[in-house]
Amino acid sequence: MNDSDDLRKSIDPRFHMLLKRTQISAHSIEPTVANLSNIQQPSQAWVNNENESQVSKIKSKPASRVYLVSKTGQQICSTRCRSIAIATFIFLICVLLIVLPLGIVYGLASSSDFSTSIISTMITTTTTTNTTTTTTTTTTTTTTPPATAWIPSNYGTPCSSTCINVTTVTPSTLIASWTFEMNTNDVSGQGHNGIIANGAAFSTGYVGQALLLDSSLAQYIFVPYIDLTLKSFTVEMWIYSFTLSSLDLSLFGECETRSIDQCLHYIIRNYKVYMGFYGDDLVGVTNLTAGRWYHIAYVYDFVNNVQSIYLNGLLEASRVPISSYMGQNGSAAFGITGETGANYYNGLLDQIRITNRVKISCEILNDASLITHYPFDGSVVDIGPNKITARTTVQGNSGISWVMGKVNQAINFNASNSYFQSCGFWALGQNQPYSIALWINPSSLGGTLFHLSTDATGSGAWCLPMIGFSSNGSIVGQTWNGNTFVVIAPIPPINAWTHIVQTWSSTNGLHLYINGGLYGSINVPVFAAAGASMCVLLGNSGLGINCQTGQILMGPYSGAIDEFYVYNRELLASEVCPLAHP
Image (cartoon, rainbow, N blue to C red; front, top):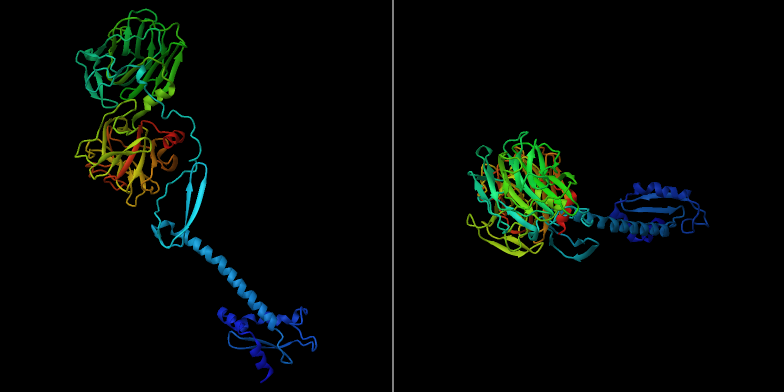
């Protein structure tokens, strides 16, 4: 047996196995081995000090075998080769320990888009207002719904002070109210029922019906005396003038005599809103336009002696009068005043209310902009300023129940023909700003949440599901401009509450808020509305099979709805916040 055979036997077989597994050829390591002759004698394991031998031969064997011998045939690299082998093996193990977990994490992240994943570890993060808690559990197979509650970045930020959720009418201070739903009764219960003169009629109003007065027929409504002497009061109304001119148009009056501060008259004079005590009066600054609805509030603060006019919820003008109103008798009337004689009003009057106190600006803004608010606390009573009547017993409606809500109770839909319906929304039929807000708690993901139609059945000449679910369960908000314009939000969780607000204006287009934060928007300069009074359906599209559907898969919704609001203006982000944090 020669020296070469001895050396071949002496090489650790584990080193051969390592080299074979890593497929390192003699050629691939030859430069490294050849350079060993240049290394200064690090130890006796590498150099035979007795013979001062140098590397003289490198023998190449099949791919996995490399031999290093001296001239004398002695093994000179056994210890060093073993060291290299061990170091290489440790390095490869470290690489595997680092790369493999990264691959698993990447796989988990990549699988989040799918409904079902096979994973070994599931990480769940729960976020609250103040803390974030992370827990880890081990499993073999898990079904991971793609829907989790979308929480906006500002969710934990306290809401700023706004006019949202301010009480609009305090019953104890309401001394008269007329809704003109096909009659002139005082719905406050104070007995100030109106009497029609010269055949006044009723027509479609701002909400529901309105009083129609024709000036050419000298039509007006006579009302018993209302005591407003030496006290604060607020008079509000919606008006829709058929014609306007430089002549006076009488809205409301109570005139004892044509003497200073004894003849109350609220009129339109020279296109502007006018508040008169007689010779001690306040005039607005905005020129009104015929053929559109305006909300007007006349406020007198007796304590501070201030007259104020609000137009569409915003302060128009104010002044300090010479004295307070002191009229002590005389009949009240709509459509005529004792101050100007026969200057009758020509148009519609709706939702007239008189309270015996000063309403603050936020109350007046809500009276002018909040169309309806249904809390669904065991009933379908509208607690907003307009008291719109809702119907939930038509079209074979069944499956309606009351369940625990986000706030108190909520309305629950659990049958294919379940729905909520309310009609008389004039503002939603116009090319004007709007906002729709509601809480949902779905038991399954599908169907229509908010449907708008010119017909109570949901299948009118103009109809559109405006909030609902797409075919994959995503929340959809959409509007109409000759085509549907859509914003698609995340898939919400089932059996959990999610807050939705959809707003539109010609300036900012369509916005969709989820849980108080803006999720998405799209520029839509025009809302191609029906130009008519509209009906709202919740939880279903009714018989609206002929409607434009957009991205909403129309059908019955299964789940609960709570705190439903409709506004005739675009809510700001700061105003959405308190609705999402009741």
